[in-house]
Amino acid sequence: MQDYEYLIHLIYCAVNETVPDEKPEEVSFKKVFLLGKAHEVANIAFLSVERLKQKPEPALYNEWKIYYYFSVERDSRQTEEREAVVSAMHDNGIRTLEAQGTVTKTLYPSPELRMMSDIDFIIDFDKLGEAMEIMRSLGYEVSQKQPVEFDAVKDGRLVEFHTVFFTDSMYNRKERYSSALNEPFSHAEPSDGDALSYYLNDTYFYLFSVLHIIKHFETAGCGIRRVLDLYYLKKAFCDKYDKAVFDSVIDSGGFSDSCEKLFAVEEMWFEGAEPEIDLSEAVSDIVRSGNHGTSGIFTRNNVRKDEREGIRFPRLKRIFGFIFPDREYILINYHEFEERGYSTFKCRMLRILDKLRKMNFSHAVAHIKEILKSR
Image (cartoon, rainbow, N blue to C red; front, side, top):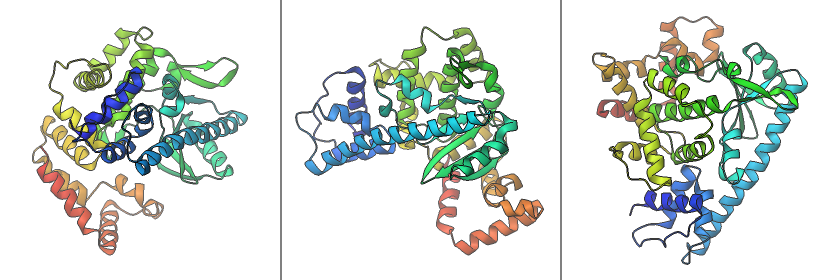
């Protein structure tokens, strides 16, 4: 048994409330714990560790226990932070829609078991500027990398504001997710007692959640936590969502293959089902992606996408794009270039000079090697 397989076993037993098997000799508790942290599932795995007769050595066991209590503390802190932001937005007449972790965690047996990296809100596009000023007044540092969204950071905590489900492009490439599902508020309704607090109906919350996981899976990789989300999403909505609407969007958008693989992994890991398709690459990608994916998976998937679209010499195209990216991509990290009205050529040259100044050659060489070996 591999370390990741035992981690999955611990999560399975926690989810299904069964007693876990004792750790096999070839498995390392330390590696299981570190992998669980990387995927933000070590806290739920701890529920099974508690039921083992042979627990990890004391120092590691205490570290694992502290991590579990950290997830409880973080949930409490994020709940308070969310309530403060919602209150500030609503006091200023800005309606909010929640459709990610703050809702998904309510499907878990206890909310702290579903850790969140950040807090996400959807608001109306014409309220972005006002929302940015409100967040600044609350002590957040605000940054805007795309015209349809912005980030707010305070004391290392991140709050994201979006106006669409999916942006039109990512890394200068047109994205099919935005054409598959958007216009968030058209699929939402206000909650009882608060006309400014919106939630998606069952069908569109389920659809958006699955598409969001597929996007991560197809882009740079999704981790174990997102696959566990699928388990709880299916459990909560299997009898509530409109299957015809769901299937239509998934099929017409070309997401069927990824959707099938992700649910097959979920069923194999957390429901004990035998897979009927080859899941070896999907499992490998999910395990090595951690919670936020890897550059290697991202590069490989984009090279494959170029090949499917019939682009000649896709690897050379990727290397050229890495060295000489589009102006829009450069402006994400060099806002002053836009303010000064620099041309694409000048933006590229100044970026290269900045990279040379920082002497970040090892990263550049490693990335080019990733592109060349992508299959």
